[in-house]
Image (cartoon, rainbow, N blue to C red; front, top):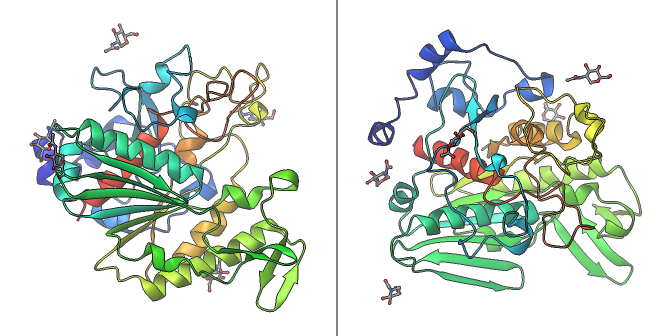
Length: 373
Ligand SMILES: *[C@@H]1O[C@H](CO)[C@@H](O)[C@H](O)[C@H]1NC(C)=O
Ligand SMILES: *[C@@H]1O[C@H](CO)[C@@H](O)[C@H](O)[C@H]1NC(C)=O
Ligand SMILES: *[C@@H]1O[C@H](CO)[C@@H](O)[C@H](O)[C@H]1NC(C)=O
Ligand SMILES: *[C@@H]1O[C@H](CO)[C@@H](O)[C@H](O)[C@H]1NC(C)=O
Ligand SMILES: *[C@@H]1O[C@H](CO)[C@@H](O)[C@H](O)[C@H]1NC(C)=O
């Protein structure tokens, strides 16, 4: 808590009391108000009403926003919306306001001091890449010497700041369970994790897997599912996701010592492919969206994997901490690269996120949670 005082923030244990006098609580739909991570209640605040992931976006164009700009060399072409010609920039000026508590501002220097000589590893798909690039840009911007190493070989991308001995890496892995190349084709083995040895030794692990499970047709990157001795061409993809995430949860329970490694799961980020979901009849999707949805509820349907993921994590004996970003991303229809993903006006990306942008908030949440102990 001392860190907050230094930052000039009110101790956020007191804030719920103050805020409850000032704000009207808006509750999300049932899916979003399920709480499975009770740690939040114990550690962020004494007030049962505080959930870091329930809240709304507030316009906040401070001169210290955003935490980095296009001069960060690690943004990656597809996420650098300003460089790719995005004309509006209000999307850079919103902060996430949880209902009933306050998020500390990300202090990169403080993070680097606390994580001196530590290893942070993201494991997951391109949304992990999105969050990883955000974090390394934030940390790089906070390093006075700007001395770094950056590299990529096959599936592993590495970044380190030698001044602090901190490394922040990303291991590309869309399914977490194994994809085996066999004679019959590519087999997605729902009950097998053989690459887990690559995950050991990190101080902080941040997993993510969802979007690849939704793929069908040409985008689908497997030919068969295997579970036990059963090999099938097709099954319900969300059922497959549930089995695979359970395999992952069991792997974590068996192999990770929580006193040495903190395990997070980067929750499912929303896509904005259908403007009807937010009753916008003037647009088709995320294109030309320049404002978030206000308030704390998303009018569209729930993300199918969300309930599965929460159930899997709550059944773990040593539950991972779910960074439950679904609602806060659902509200940010304006946060995607859309046609400013660098592939020209015909290439439209309503799944990833501009950087700087919404993933900075995911890292701010990660920072807030890591500060708690
Ligand atoms: C950030 O953290 C560092 C190290 O703890 C501290 O010296 C500095 O004052 C903090 N910066 C702000 C803006 O609070
Ligand atoms: C914030 O927005 C207001 C109103 O749009 C504007 O007058 C002000 O200059 C902006 N401040 C910054 C730091 O961008
Ligand atoms: C950058 O880090 C390397 C390796 O630790 C060190 O040898 C070098 O002096 C550093 N450079 C600066 C400018 O700090
Ligand atoms: C969106 O439209 C649906 C169907 O017309 C309606 O039931 C719903 O209340 C609307 N939601 C919002 C947020 O306007
Ligand atoms: C979690 O455990 C409950 C109670 O045993 C069970 O009903 C539920 O199906 C489990 N969830 C998953 C995803 O296996």
